[in-house]
Image (cartoon, rainbow, N blue to C red; front, top):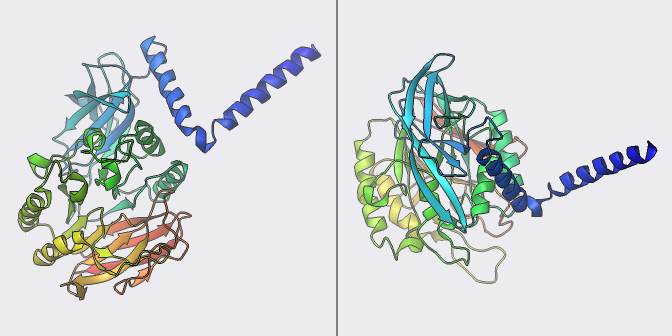
Length: 432
């Protein structure tokens, strides 16, 4: 009897030790692979009542008050993939057949499913579930915004070696601000766009968030990198996020959307990485940008772009570099002045800076507000950059993870920066 008790105790301790070991950051990749394999076996041998659907997500559309894109993945091919929609607590009102595709990258095959939901009523609480004609997921909330007042979370670069810090940040941000209408990720979502595990880790960090509110992602340079750190078209990014097409020739790379009285424009700033495939990217994008911004009737115009508009001198590298404006800034900033943009949010440099208002390449209160959004992952450039003459506020050093909250109304836009502990670091508002 005692021997059996000791054996049971030893087994429990061993299981606990193995569980603890699998929580180590360096074992995150095998842990996710094992979880995916177990899920596949459960589905394949019909050992679960759950649908073969994971990494379920809501994707931003041009008008999220009346439409939503739903995406998910299955372990196996599923030609009967569908989504069901209902008003909260009511019978199903829509069944949307999903469009299915296959993404094979880094030796991993993903069966992707996309359901385009339209005809929604603004300001309404819906629920949705996904699956096929045999099994469904659980019901999940889908809220359509209405009116001029809303809030949104804005996350800087989340690229990481270990995505646990990104997970902690995004989960706390959503817990502290559960009423946000959507969230933005400012590019460099992952460290390597071809690395399948990194995408799984990014989605894993967002469980409980991305299936409840839509994401508006931005293409960063790291989404274009191959496993050997060369460049390619951002194949995984473009298939994992079925986004509005600003220009059909560059589907998913740049786009715009409206929430309340705010017109958001997401730009692709990766001209240097994509020049082999898209030599006219900036020219075509600029033409579209002018048409898009002159065509909107919304009161506020906000630009979301990955690469920053300023050039910084190095504080901790022997190579000298003068401060000034980046090539990206010199190209786009005159257009922002021309079409009277209100705010420009950038990323890429992994530091939070408020530059105030700039117009004509100098400080001018009539120009757009420029915010460099910071860093949300564990790839951090502590002490790398000098302070720029146009910086009005620099995050306390050494910097760690942060995020922004946008609070929008018809009268004002307020951007609040929080550190990883949820403490307010900075706030700035614009009114008109």
